[in-house]
Length: 226
Image 1 (cartoon, rainbow, N blue to C red):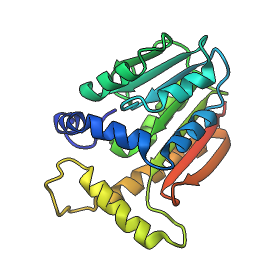
Image 2 (cartoon, one colour):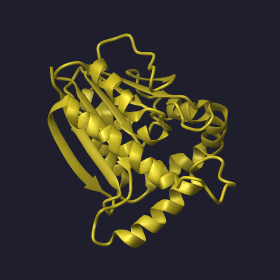
Image 3 (cartoon, helix red, strand yellow):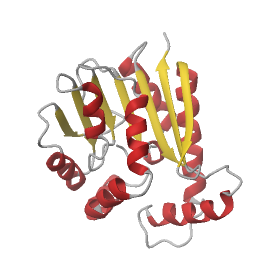
Image 4 (cartoon, rainbow, N blue to C red):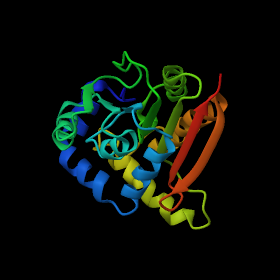
């Protein structure tokens, strides 16, 4: 993926926290069920090819493999070396799951793709709507693109949830030593996520929208139109 902060800073940051990130990605209550739902939203069939943009430590890859079966292909792409190595180790038992270091905005993919999944990724991109356009072009008509991202909740109990969410965003935005920002990171994140999900809806002929984890996580799946 292409981070909105400097590439080296972001890679060092996420690389340093690879093990903790993996623990959070796999063990946070509600997140495994969300990952399973995201994989299902890709509408994959046995033998299909699916690419995950920004696969992180590979938490989604086994769920995607379940969908395509042993005859399908799963490709995970991420730009951070230590995180990608952990994804490679955790999926080593699957001979049809491959991980590659690369940029989600310029994925090193040269085969037909049936679906693209991107979870908690578009908020780190400079042009999230443009990236969604590229992913839609990659799968082509009748292919599927699925986005899952964390943003402020709109539920009635949102105020305390959003307070916690803002703190998490600030702490997970490199450099974490900054206490004040000219523009709040959580507001920038909301704007990018809104743009990405709106673009997917524009490009899709069939759309499913869901919210999860106290309304903080938005899941949008689309079947791309002609």
